[in-house]
Image 1 (cartoon, rainbow, N blue to C red):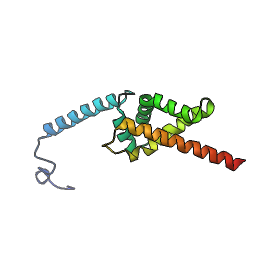
Image 2 (image 1 turned 90 degrees about the vertical axis):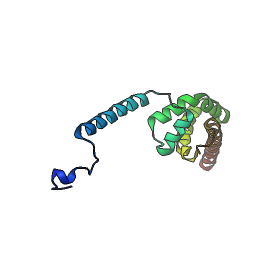
Image 3 (image 1 turned 180 degrees about the horizontal axis):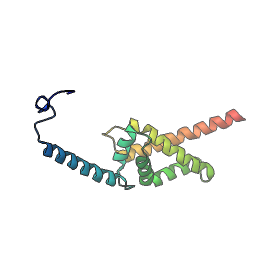
Image 4 (image 1 turned 90 degrees about the horizontal axis):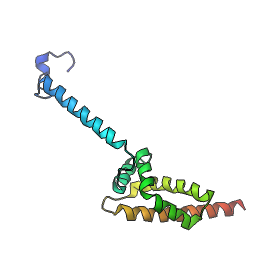
Length: 140
């Protein structure tokens, strides 16, 4: 397209007029703005959507926040079951949340997201407890 006359470039990018092309761009910009405004709301994602977003980017802040808000009770109950209450349990909640986000890539679309998250929380708490036991045994 470099150094071609206007007649030669006509039709390369489509047969639309300049006005049509500008109108298409403005429609796309409006849609993008609406989408970006909608994704700023916290907690509107379902667990399924959260897991799909985290499977692509485990550091997606909105998805991690939604994961915590949607499953705070499950996370808290699982951590209390494995670690009790106190400062250790609080730090384990954060570690569990991080591990759940890390393992979201293993989630399959056909699985029930709530069951998957509960199983993941149990499995990761068990691993965290075993790691803590091993670490304590190695220090002594």
